[in-house]
Length: 239
Image: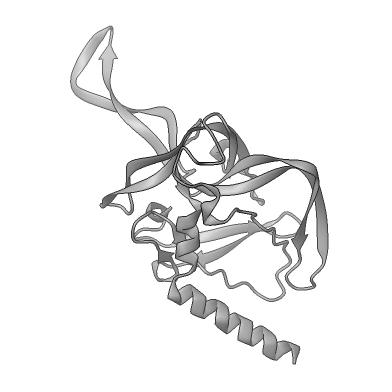
């Protein structure tokens, strides 16, 4: 989420094949941010000798989730999202946790912060799920049942080596977790309301930015040019 990088340096932490985390520093200028949502994309330039697996994130075309009620998912459909939980985040390795929930409304319009100061209305998915601060930007997946065993593969970008993963569940990328709706609540002491003091309560109802906004950001001309440059360099190395 953009607020995580706004006006400050950030770093990307990933695990290598041995499960040891490596940090890749970034600056605000490295990020390409959407204008109408809080989606941000940063090209990750890694050392060619970096030893890691690249896992595909399957997703449906943009018409997979048309405006409700024609959507192929309905309220109550199971979802899950991946993020960190500070008490068990790992020391020398990224140890993510998976939280689960359900679709509360397939399509809605909500007002969100697209950066530290600006609010805009955006069409989104609404989910019912528990989360904690710091999980904004987590990928959210929706489950689809597969008719048979689905084989997915991770790929070593350096050698092309593949590692198979068999599953009968088809996790599809739904979008990016933005955050939860918060409602101000009165504060009481000894049964008496403290005047002028309120706290924000986590409602357990969250906002998911649809996958199409991630796709649109990835098609930004700066990122397209960057991918073309990488592609040309790769072709020259193979010649």
